[in-house]
Amino acid sequence: MDAGNATAVERLMSAFQEAGCRPPVLVLGAEAEALRRRLPEGVAERCLRLVVNTQWEAGRTGSLQAGLAAAADAAGEASDFLIAPVDHPFVAAGTIREMLGALENGRASGARVVIPVHGGRSGHPVLCDGRLRGEFSRLRAGEPASRVTSRIPGRVLRLATEDPAVLDDLDTPADLQRARARVAAGAVR
Image (cartoon, rainbow, N blue to C red):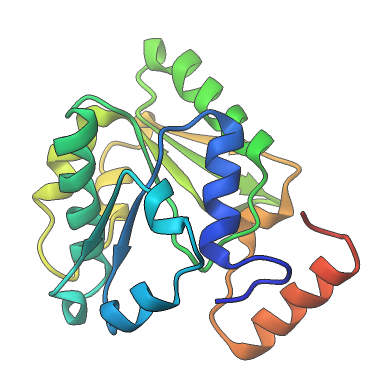
């Protein structure tokens, strides 16, 4: 998906890299082979792993679980992870750094999940302590990730951010047009 002057995948990967994150796991679902062929040059090589969720019809949970399994194999079970849907591509690297710092500082008081909040609304990406990986892997098909993140409210840290991009969700052609206009106007990176 062209989100202005770069694809949504490229935007997210750049933000992760700039924030100091490990290379991401990219999960493809429906039309995986066609999407793989359309990836910009070098994107697949910049990923820790590129995996295909063959059960994509069962919902996003399977993609999350496929990505977590691939990341655990490559980076270890205890590694913290971001859940970053590709249709939320404009989050700033600084926001991700703030989230990483908030999780690190909040662990002593029980924080295991950091959710960015702008204007009172929760957004993406969501940062999770690596110790939650098993809880996500036990979700049934179709169960939302929020079952894990909200199971114990005290472990969720809602981080207020000035970054409105945490709320950007490119679900419709109109959403994408508005995003491209913001990029052209220099309102987002």
